[in-house]
Image (cartoon, rainbow, N blue to C red; front, side, top):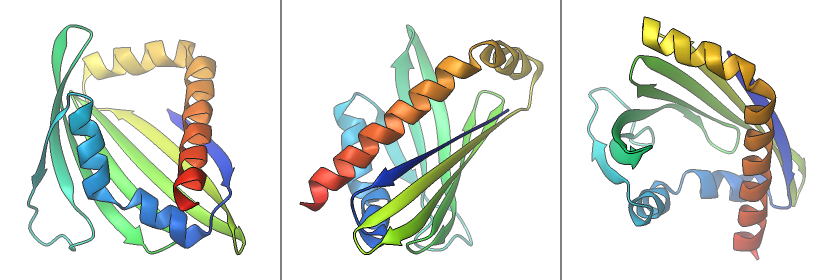
Length: 152
């Protein structure tokens, strides 16, 4: 199952990329929101491709996820994988410069169930695809505003 969204940002592609790869700031934000996050070491991974284990409470249950940045092309693309209870999520964030002070973020999210339970979850998400798509677009719009405000 695939979702995608695009949003223009009033900032240069380099500034958007710098914001997205400020991993320490993202770790601090997650910690402030109650997520227990720990950076993990990976063999043969470039220094700009970190990985994390995160634990958080959602819906009254403890959730554990693993996040890995797999590929980084400065000012162009970031690819990550998230593992969560039998569900693999591949995330691509692409930046397209439109002008010196304007860029377009294109986000693609691909869900792949690895277990029967995850297949049932993805199947139920198909029914709510329109709602999830709108939430992704709204979140990307909020992120674009945040980036533009931080740049100023």
